[in-house]
Length: 636
Image 1: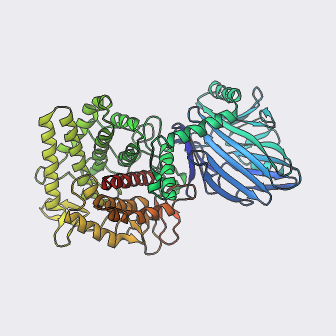
Image 2: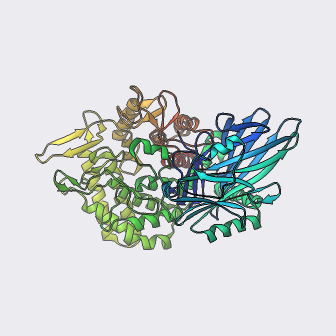
Image 3: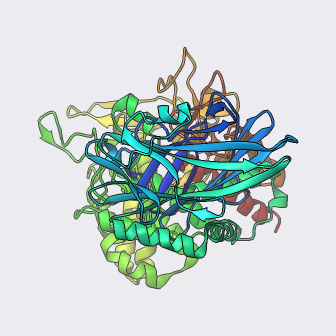
C-alpha cells in the first residue's frame, strides 16, 4: 500500500497508509530506526454504545492544509466528522495531533476517542516497555536510548485519565469500550488511551495529543513540560506558519502555470523537505511495505538520487549546503561513492559484488560520483558561495574528479565498466558516460575558478576525449541512435546492448550534447515512440519490474525526462508548450495529497511500488523550474 502525507522535521519522519493511519515513524533520523512495523497505529471512537473504527466504519479523505506539512485527514460517518491535523514541530522533536470532533446533529453526543500505539522500538518488539507515569499523567514507551512520551490536552486539562498497557492486543479493550488501566507491561507490548469528549448539537470540540521523542526520560519530560507551557495551540500555530513561510519564500509567477501544476510544485518542495535529514542525507523513500519484496527498504541515500533532487531544490532557491557537506563526509578515500548509504552516513546494504570472475572490482555506479560534482557546480553557478565551496574543492571536487580521470579505459577513453542506474546490469553505459562527462566538465570549471588552469585543461581534455569515445563506441549509425550499453571483451569483440532505455535522455541533460543535435534528436524520437504508454514513459523495452501482463509501467521520472527534452529543445513558446501535456499527465497521477509514486500501473493508473519517491518529486521540481526559466528566456 502506498504511503501518504509524510511529515517531519529532519529528525522525525511520520507517514500514513491510505486509511489515514500512522504506518511509518522514524527517529532520530529520517529513514533510520523505524519504530513501527507492519501494523498501523489504530484509532476508533465510541459514540453512545456504538464503536466505530478506521478504516471500515468511515469515509476517509486525506490531504494537507494548504502550503504546509500539516495533514488534514477527515473521517466521515453520517452526522459525525473527525478531523486529524497532524504535524511534527519544525524545531522540537514533538509529533502533535489536533483532533476536531464535529457534530452536525441537533442532539448532544457523548463520545470516547481511542488511540492505539503499536511501537516496535529500534524496529523490533523485543524488550520494549510501556508504562503510565503519574507525575505528569503520561504514557511512555521506551527501550535503551529511545523514549516516546504520549500525552493529551482535552476538556481544558492536561494528562491522560484512561489508558491501558499490555502484551500486543490491547486494542480489543478499546473495541469493548473499557480500558483496564494496567500501568506497565514489558516485552512485546502496545498501549491504548481514551479521550472523552462531549459535543453539543451542531458544534465541535477540539483536543490535542502529542508524542515527545528523545533519548531518555528527562529529555522527553522536558519536551512535555515545554508543550504544556507554550500550549499545544501555540505549537500548532507556529509550525503551520513556518511551513507557509518556507514554501513561499521564493516568489514564482504561478499564473504562468495551471493551479494544479503550481500546487504540486509547492507540494513537491514540502515532500522533498520531509525526506531530508538534518545531517544532509536525502532519503529515496520510506515505505516499509517494500520489505516484503526484497527484505530491504528504500530508506537509504543513493548519491545519484540525492544529487538530482538537490539540483532541483537548488534551482528553486533552497540552498542544499548540508547535502554536499554530507557527501564530502561519505566520499571514499579514493574519490568515489559506493552503492548507497544509511541516513546517518554508514555504508548501506548492497548487491554489487567486490569480485567478478575471480577478479577484484569496484562495486560502484560511477554516475553517482559524477552527478554529485555536476550538481555541486550547478549549485555554485546559482549561489556563487565561494566560502562554502572552498573547503569542498580539494576534499570532494578534486578527489572525485581525479578518480573519474583514473577510472578510465586508457585505450578507448571511456569509463571502466560499472553498474547502471537501474542497478540491473554492468558495463559502459551511455547514461554513465554522459554523467561522467558532466562531472568532469564541472570539475574543470571549478579548477578554472580556483586558478588551477592546467588542471582545468586536464579535466576538460578528459571530458572531450570521453565524448569522442562515446560517439565512436556507443552511437549506432545504422539505427541512428545511441546504444544503452557496450562491453569490451578480452578478445577484442564489442558486445552491444541496443535496448532503448529512457536513461538515454542523459545525452543532453548533463551537457554532452546539445538537445538539437541530430543524434540526440533521433535517439529521443525513437525513445518516445517505443517507450510511450499513453503520455507516460516506461524505463526501457520489456521492463518487467512490477509489470502486470504484457505492458510495462510508466515511471514518473522517465516521463518527466521527456518533458525536460521538450523544454530543452524548444526555440519558441509554442514549442515549449509541448512539454505541458506531459507535465499535466504526471500532475493528474499524484495522490489527492500530492504524493508521487515511483511508477504508475499501466492498467489502472494507480500508484505502484514505493510512494512517495523523493526522486519523482525532485524531478517534478526540476522540470517546472526548467520550464519557467526557458519561458523567461524565450520572452526576452
